[in-house]
Length: 326
Image (tube, rainbow, N blue to C red; front, side, top):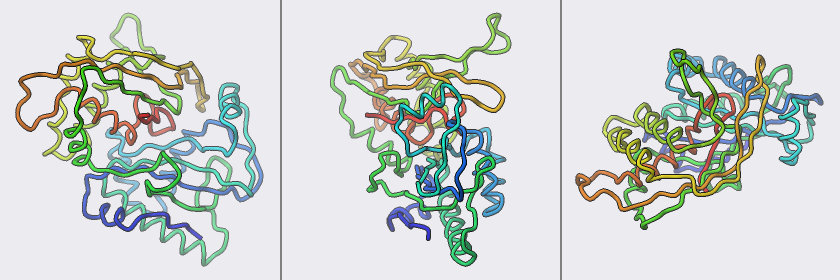
């Protein structure tokens, strides 16, 4: 039976506030023993869209048509194993076991508020059908079938990777934040992260950055804000001000515990990094900020909260770039 771990306030908010962002944990149980590769971001992406095409074809069409906006993110399948074993298996591309007695999870974020009530009603419909027919698979990941064990969407749960907010709430929270002369901001890069740099016109070609420099993250997040936020809030973030602040070394890396890592996609290995990075944000803030606007440091703090839902960098819809502030 589907565990309805959803607060009543959240369900109502999802209907009434279409500018909401959601981070959910989907709990799955394999139907039988088997194995799966440790990094399954591509498979999860495909399985999620396949499920939507069956359960809610109009939502699948919306997501497909909005692919350039990336209206969701998916994690790889999370195994109930020590993280050291998982990282070693990812690095060496060795399969990991699936056990029907254990629960596995996927993290899904929805970046368009209208998606949540549609997703929720589709889950309820799937749950009813499963109860009526017995062990009907909920999702196939590669060749493996999984049952739906539950969905966690309440931030009161034990998982710190679950939550919901709105663009308006993010703005108000940032506006209330008072900056000291020097502030520190720590970001955890929990899944493989990298940034696709360069272009076809460069004499040096393209490459994947292996360090989270501020100029790679925050202008990118500013563009995501302007793609996703409702029109009346889009101007709360000014990309040019953020770029100038970073170029002037207002924001620099203060400390880090990062290491390079790699995972295997179906056609290529992908290098990146994992770990945590602390950034120093120096003041003073601008003296001539127009009334009602956020300071540049308030904007950066806002974007660090947005990143919990959007991820950062390359292939966030396929398990990469999942981050949170510490």
